[in-house]
Length: 160
Image (cartoon, rainbow, N blue to C red; front, side):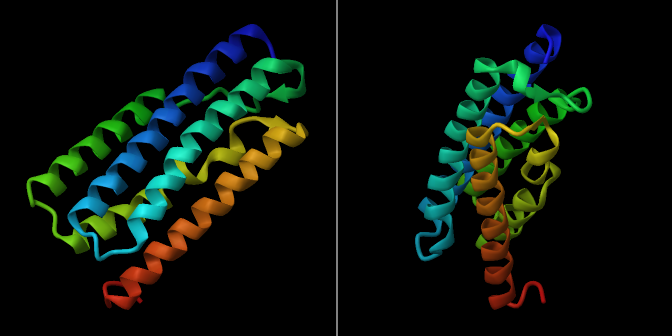
């Protein structure tokens, strides 16, 4: 990976970490407003851990950039910023009671289905074992998050 690509990766991964932190924070707010919902506390913890994992993945890239390849330019820095702003707006809606619990659950499910949450494996190419293990952990967590939220919405008869 050349220096220009590495600079792009640094910016992007730092924003991805901020996205994960914002999502975790949204889940914390939901957990505080609807403590009877068991799904949010665990998701909040895992999303915060994802934020740290993304930074660890970046550290792998920085330590050995020659072992990583950027298959395509990383686009969407503005989209990540807007995603974070949207999460902040959703937190305000929860706090102001503009969202009911079902709205917040649906938003949570949409977050977990988003391209941002599902696009990690397309960011860089590498055989680096530490990076791949971290990536697999995030991908498995995201699948479980989506299934958990979809299951909860199905239980509430919001989706089939």
